Each structure stands twice: as C-alpha cells, then as structure tokens.
Image 1 (cartoon, rainbow, N blue to C red):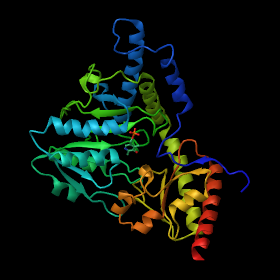
Image 2 (image 1 turned 135 degrees about the vertical axis):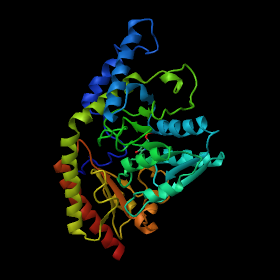
Image 3 (image 1 turned 180 degrees about the vertical axis):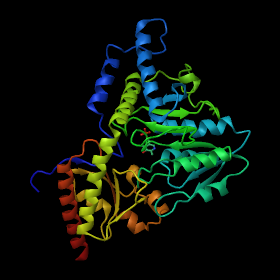
Image 4 (image 1 turned 60 degrees about the vertical axis):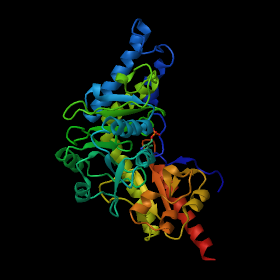
Length: 388
Ligand SMILES: *Cc1c(COP(=O)(O)O)cnc(C)c1O
C-alpha cells in the first residue's frame, strides 16, 4: 500500500467533539470562567447560568425535570453513584440486586464489589441476540430486591433491551430501575416517564461532547429515589456529588444532547445505511461472516462481526490506518475473551474472530468504500496465510 488511509470507525469507544459543541464550550474556559458556587458576584452567576441551561437541555433530552439531573465526571462515576448510592441508602430494607451478564465494566465491577461486601446479586442471562428474558427477570425478583440495573444498548454488540417492558415489571414489583444508557442517550428517543426508568446514566464523549463529564438522572417522585453520596465536600449537586463542576464540560454535554435532538432522525438514517451497506458487501464476499447482536433491536452504527478463520488481532494489525476494535472491544487492554460475546454463546474461537466497527456522524461513503475494500482484501490475505 502506498499511503495508508486514516479512517476512524470506533465511535462506540469515543467520538470527536462536534465543532458546534466546542463553540458552545469555549467562552466557559476564558471569559465565563466563574465558579457556579460563587453566588456573590457576576462571574459565578454567569457560570451558574451556563450550568442551568445545560441541565435543562439534558433533562429535556430524556423527558425529565432539571432538578432530577446530577452532573458527574462520566458514565463510570454515574454508574457507581447510582448503584453504590442506592445500595447504601436502602441497605436496611434490602440487599438484593439484579443485573445482567452483558453490562459495561463500570456496572459489572460495582456489583462484583457489592457481592464481596455482603450484598446478593442475580446475574440474568441473555439469549443469542443479547436480550434478557422478562420471565427470568420476574422470577429473579424477591421481597428484598432493591434495584435492577440493565444496560440500555450494548456497547459491544449493539443490542437494545426491551426497556419499556422492563420498566413495567419493575414498577409492578416496586423495584428501582437503573439503566446505563451511555450508548443510547441522544441517539435514541428516551422518555424516563414512558419507560419507567428511575435512574439513568450517560456521558458526553460518546455523543460528540467532551470526555470527563456525564450525567445521572435520579427520579424525584413516584417513586422518589434516595442516594448516599460517594464524594463528600462542598455540597454541590444537592450534596450528592461534591466538587466544583466542570463547567465547560457540562455546557458541552448540554449542547451535545440538544444537537442530537435536532439531527437524530437524518443522521441515524444515513449512518444506518452506511453500516448495512458495508455488512452486505462483506457478506457478499464472505457468506460465512455473521453479524452479532439483535437483527432489528440494535444500534444501527454497530457492526460486531464474527469472521470464521480470522484472528481479530491479526485483522487489526493488517489494517493499521483503520481504527476499529477487536473481540474484547472496550476492555481490549486485557486480552481475555469478551464476557459479552461469551454470554451470547460465542465460542472462544469465535470471540477471537470478532471485530467491532462503529460508525458515526463524520463517517463518509468514501471512507466506507475504502474500508470495505480493505477488509475484503485483508480477510483474504489472512485466510490464505492460515491455509499454508
Ligand atoms: C463508555 C461507556 C461507559 C464509561 O463511560 P466513561 O464516561 O468513559 O466513564 C459506561 N457504560 C457504557 C455502556 C459505555 O459505553
């Protein structure tokens, strides 16, 4: 190859900041640099106004009220605050939690920690498409069940859970419902009311906002959810998350949510077509390639592909200019096979042969054409090498 292309297809790992989001943030680094807690002067008021506006934008994006939104340092912190915060607040009423086998590590590892601290956790299985079974859920609920935590849309395979139905079951049984919606918020229409969600996590950097900022929605009525804080100090965020807010980041999160609300329909349609087109071309070339996840209830930008006879690491190595992830995706720092892929029934071999491509707002048709060609050639090279 002469000059290798540089194409980013890892939007589910992170996204670039949209120029329009950056524009909204900029003044809050320089002129409007005040501390929103400074209530005695204009600098503080201006910063507070920026935060208020962002809180309204975020609340509007999920059909919540502004007072139900807490700002955090990201989805990992939001998940920790939601789960540990509820666990500590309701400890005397119950110590049983339910979650799934396909959670992001920032949910999974919190529950593993709680198990060590004397809480009981039921881990729901998923079917071959990555969905939980509502009957399993109903059976798992006990008298002392405090909360269910389910990932809204999966970061590895893109499967979207039947959130509305899950919310209904939780309401009927008076169990709190938390969802890690980091891969869904913004991209999919969400209404915490219609979906019966009590706590909801997401961040800015998966939706064209900055890294290091996130939100947690906490329901205030019917039912009201109480949390114990994890971080103590100046009492910001109604005492639930002390520390001076990342004001430019918060403003960026608000702007990112609002942008998506305006452009969601057209963007999703375009990106979905590109992803489907790429898959069809690969499938034409290699009919044995399988797309993991649910055929229709899925994030349209996600292409989790099991490619028989190909080692994902080798494929990544063969296409240095193209950014995508191999098997274990988010946690590719560790080389263990992905527990998400194992949960949908993939063998170790199949896990090793799985790649995740994720498209986004700035993916072009020209890029997809190059990637299609590149993948087809690389797979053929690797398979030829394996045959000798
Ligand atoms: C990226 C991601 C997280 C972690 O988000 P950070 O803001 O980087 O902490 C949590 N959950 C899901 C589903 C994610 O995709």
